[in-house]
Structures are given as structure tokens and as C-alpha cells.
Image (cartoon, rainbow, N blue to C red; front, side):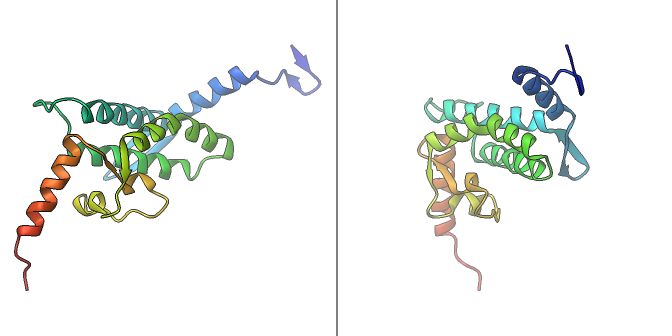
Length: 160
């Protein structure tokens, strides 16, 4: 179908597909000569959060993820935020939509990290807009590892 301006505008479904395809072509610099597409980063964030949530409720096994895997997930979310900062408002909304379920899930199985334990262990200095760095799992192997680290750090003599 043609309009007076050329081809018919895409339907919402077609428009969504085109924008999703565009996320596949957006390279996000991760530093140290590495980059991933926005779609890969979003997918990684979703997969990491899902696994961390599932493992927070299961018995610990040899393959269970710990605090460093949690930090990898948080770093993925950082790269999604950083990559989205230069996108058009339509693409930013799409990115927000694509990460919203994983963001909601992370909030569901974590609590506010009032002690700043996550950032201290990860040696991170997140801004206030990086709310994900200010969350700590309620229970599970990540929480246990962070609490163990804190207990050990408290027992170490301070150097003067």
C-alpha cells in the first residue's frame, strides 16, 4: 500500500521488529577493546538475573554462581545503561522495555544494600542512577559469600 508520502508506515508490530533488529546492530563499547551488541547485552542481563534468582532458592552446587557472577550481571546492566545513553528516545524506550522484566526480577529477590556491601566487595563506585549496585540478594550463595567476606574483612587488622 502506498500513501502520498511513499510506502505505508509500518504497523506497530513491524515497527517493533525493526527497532529490535536495530538493537542487533548497535555496538556497545565495553572497554579493553571489547564490544557487544545492545541485544546481546540485554539478553545477557536477562539470563544472568534469571539464573541468579533461581540459584538463590536452591541448594549450593559446584556450578552455583557466586558474588563475582553477580558483579558480572551488574556490569552487564551498566553497559546496557551506558549504551542506551546515546540512543534515540524511541530506542531508549525499547531498551527500557526489554530490561524491565529482569530489572523487576532483580528487585524481587534482592533488598536495598544499606551497608554498601555489594559496592565495597566489588570495588565499585556506582552512581545513584545505577540502582542495581545498591541491591543485595536476600538469601542464597551470593549473599552468603558477601557476608562471609564482610566477616573476614572485619577480623583483619587494619594497617597503620
